[in-house]
Image (cartoon, rainbow over all chains, first blue to last red; front, side, top):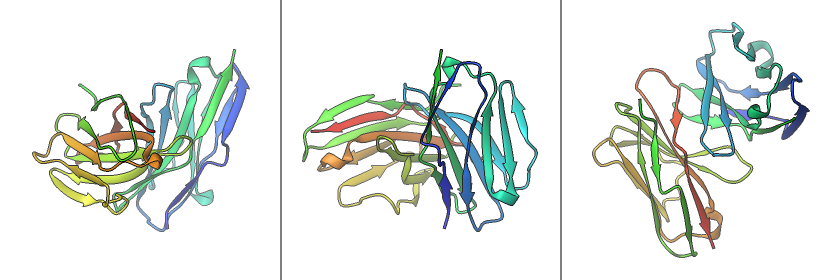
Length: 113
Length: 113
């Protein structure tokens, strides 16, 4: 069975702090993809990153970075120097070769000025 | 490039009424998805189309929900009759045949009274 767990329901930090959102996944497939999406108050899911199971290189994009570790089945997301505009719900998702995507329950991130 | 379009953005109906949602995917995207997102949860896949054929509808409550994508482009999702528990955001997403990344529309927020 496939599963995505985002144990942090809500996180609140002060602006400019660094914050890490955790994602743990379960799958029996050897080929799979992991995603992070951002859902601002407007409701649209915005694609942030995709990682395939064969590429464990960490990635940095501006203030965003992602740490993929197959050994612990984790795909964590860090925002450095957070800003108020980062406030949103963030979803981690798993896509397997069976072509079905499963989302975690989301982490609501609030950045206080 | 235009994104995924959905209408209406909001809909309020009474239980036992019918409602229909429309989605126009990104041009050229062969795969189209409908998701249900209940408040506080991650999106749940209802149905997946590849061109005009159904790939996966295992989580679609077929006694009241139906969907079609007759010409392999835009799609409609219908609920008949609606129940209180159908109150949710209905998201449409599409992807091309290559990369697995799904791109989401703004969603339709349904309230059933």
